Length: 242
Image (cartoon, rainbow, N blue to C red; front, side):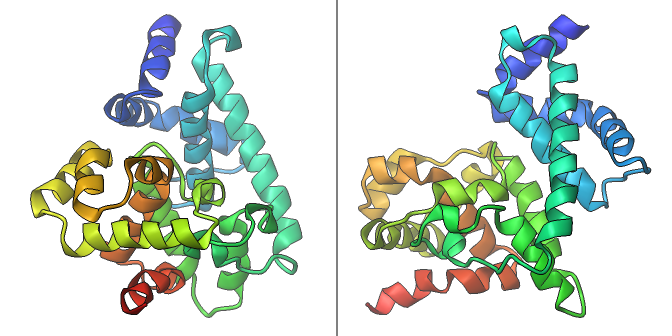
């Protein structure tokens, strides 16, 4: 049984369909591990579920045979992630400002050491509801199907004005001119068709491939029901008049 799961984990790192199947198959394991680490019953409606799910997906990405059996390895990462999350949540509420450069592009990634999610906790606490926080968690769930997390954007956002503008062109093309069947293919296969996007938008394949995660995220946010997060991406539309 362990050997079979180990093989699935190795395959899942390269195949989003297998990744999704493995996550679905191991949902109860993820929940049990999270509940044990948090010392309380965790359900899929709790914030801890999203943290645990991200850790499980990360385990798929970094797993290798020399790390032993996959499930114990994944459980270790889940426990570590939750411990870190609780620690940062406690310390960051009164300290970390929202860092819009992560969504807008530009700035330095290390300006937001703890990531967007922990910034959102503070912003949510200052509001009468948790709408922004819920949007982040919902967006993260969707992005997990594409093999990465919302929290990974710190490392994959464009930092220079030129590449930021190029990404905006590619994003607008996908939103306004992309053939509907190709957009549906993106959603169905969870892969960005780099070649057709480069040919249609005029943006280089190298840039599209490098900022693939950022482009996928932008399309999901701007096309979906994420009004609070979309506020950080106004530059995509503004650059049409530049």
